[in-house]
Amino acid sequence: MAAAAAAVTAALSSLSLHPPSRHCIRLFLKPIFSTPILSSPAIRRQTLPKLAATGDIETSFFDNVDPNAEIPFVPPAPPEGYVPPPAFDELPPETDEQVAAAFEEIYGPAYSGESVLGNDVYVMDAKVKKVSSLLGRKKREKFNDGFEERVVQVRRVTKVVKGGKKLSFRAIVVIGDKKGQVGVGVGKAKEVVDAIAKSAVNARRNIVTVPMTKYLTFPHRADGDYGAAKVMLRPASPGTGVIAGGAVRIVLEMAGVENALGKQLGSKNALNNARATVAAVQQMRQLRDVARERGIPMEELWQ
Image (cartoon, rainbow, N blue to C red):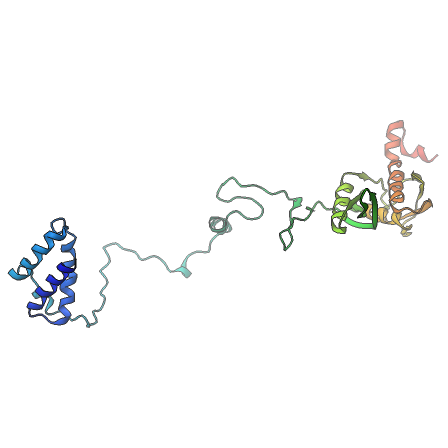
């Protein structure tokens, strides 16, 4: 390649060309090197000096070319029948379906999992949403089923094992939708947040229905006990409110009861009193159900 370049340079130096035109000749001779005939270095060393010496290469059309001149760009004429496209601001507004399809094509399906383009995607459950912390640690699932949660008690408990004492937390949670559904749950874990989450899951597994009248009170009186705890529940007139304390009040409020009387008899344990309240509620029955079972009208129950 060095010998071929030297031969081309010597041939160009013998020609009476302006310095700018030599660069154009090199560009003109570049396709010659790539031809199959001149692909071999030996053939190039023998052919290029002969071409330059005989003057078979025509270079006169480079004399009138000024490489420093500014050549204006003349666009080609459009063909017949050409209609330019409308401007971006002149287009009609896009519909919601078109915007959703464009968004899905770029970023994928939306969070709801509904695909506009018809792709098979994983539809997430609307009741459960998985969350994660900043450190990437997985948290408990957060339920969106309409139930409210209220923590009754969080205690630090210990378990005696072979190596010593094992510390953990116990949480009591009452959930309810304030429409007659209520549940009591308990859970233990090494951290308070995990204990509350476990107790909420346990409470959802033990949901009971509280019978209520149109005045948001009990249909009749009832007593319930759980362990050493005893709870007494009585209906109340409208405007009375919930007159109770401790875990009994929390259970009644989460159930949606607005007028009732409650009394704790015996133990003051929060978990036993909450479960005793649930046991007393399960003994209650609506008057229409009793009348239907007996086969008599409701008016005869008051006689």
